[in-house]
Length: 79
Image (tube, rainbow, N blue to C red; front, side, top):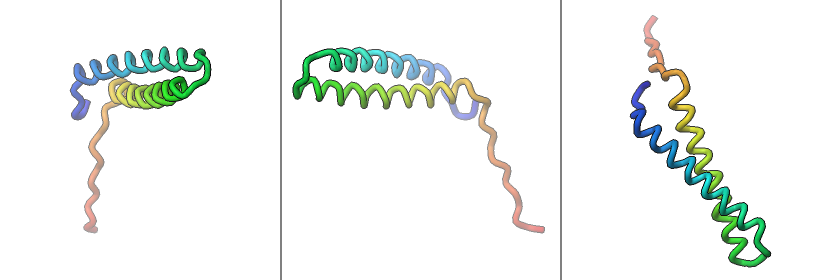
């Protein structure tokens, strides 16, 4: 892979998945609690955290599992 530190990327993938799992638990708890300002803040923060960590985990996963990126071919401007 071009420029990807595989052990570091795998570690970040696991950390991001753990954060997503914890955020999903917070979101579940917030949605099952009675309505209130604290519940609203919990739902907001946990849903944003869940979305962000899931998005980043998918990006890391694609970098780890996808084909290696090739350098773009430079075409000369001459004839």
